[in-house]
Picture 1 (cartoon, one colour):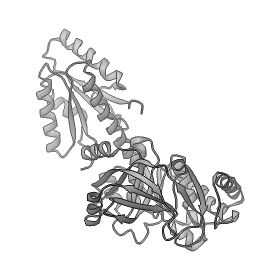
Picture 2 (picture 1 turned 180 degrees about the vertical axis):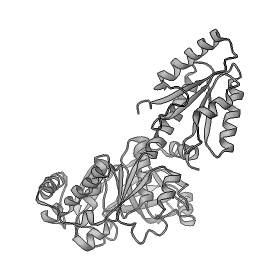
Picture 3 (picture 1 turned 90 degrees about the horizontal axis):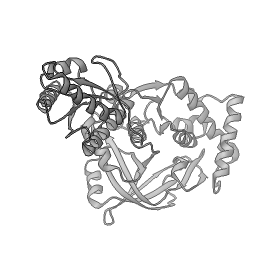
Length: 411
C-alpha cells in the first residue's frame, strides 16, 4: 500500500548550537518528508493524520507535552536519534504519556539514512493511519442486533472507546418499505448482473432475485445520506416481513467498498472494517459450523459472500428459511486469516493463520461453505474460550500484522 501521510513537529532547545542544529533538523526533516511527512507547527491541528515528534534535543520534554496536547486514543510516535540528548528526552516524554494513560512508541534512528529505522517508523505511521481512519468512521446499525447475538451487543460507547468508530442507529423500516419504481428499475439491473454471473439458479425465481437486490438500493440510500463507512443489518426481519433476504445486497455493498455485515453484528462489522482499512481487502463473515479436532479443521458457512472473493457462485435460497436468495460461492483454496474480536469491552482478539482446504456442499449448512485447517490447539481454545459466534475470513496470512496492530492500539 502507498506511504501514509502524516505530520511531524520538530522539538529543539535553543541552548544548542544553531548551525549544527539546523543541519540536524534539515537531514531528519528530509528523511521524514520522504516517508510522506509534512512539517507542522507545534499546536497545529491535523486530527485526521498521524503525528510524529522529531525529538531533536534534550530539554524539550514539557514543550513536547504542551505541543501534542491532551493524551487521546492514538499513540504518540517519537523519533529519536543518537545525539543532543534526544533519546533520554524521548524516554521521559513517553514515560509521562504512559502515566497519563496514553500510548506511544520511540523509534530510534541511527541517522537520516537509517533505512531499517525509517521502514519501521513508516510501518508505525501506517498503523496509526488505520486507527485515525477508524476514529473517523461511521457504522450504521440498521435495526437492533439479532436477538441471538447475546455476546455481540457492545454499547456504542464501548465501540467508540476501544476501536474508534461511531455507531449510527438506523431505523429498520428504512429497508422494510417497498421500493419505488425507479428503485426497482435499478434493482432489476443489479439482479440481471447477478444472474449473468452465476453458474446456475437453483431455487429462486427471477422475481426473487429482483426483490433481494432491491434491498441494496435501500441500504445505499442510508449509506449516502448518513455518510456511512459500514453497515450492520438486522437482516432476518427482511425474511419475516418482506419474504426476501439481504444476502445479495450485503455482498454487493462489500464489493463496492462499503463494509457490510449480517444480523446487526457490530462486532464483526468492526473487524471487517478494520481489515479493509489495514489491507484494502474484502472479508467474509461466517458461522463456525463444524470442528474436526483430529484434523485441526474448522468448517465455516454463511449465505452471503462478496463475489470478488469467489471464483464462481450459484444463486440459492436462504438456508434457514428457504426464502429469498443466498449465494453459494466457491472460494479459492490457499492461505487465509481468521479474525474474531470480542470480550466485555471489545478489547480481546483471536487471530490465526490457516489454510482453506476445500469448499463443501452440505444440505444442513448455510450455502457458502469452506473447510479451514487451523490446528487442534486453536480449535480447543475456541471451544474453551469463545469470543462469540461469527468469524471473519480474509485471504492471505496476516495474523502477525493484525496482532501487532492490536497490541499497539487496543490491548
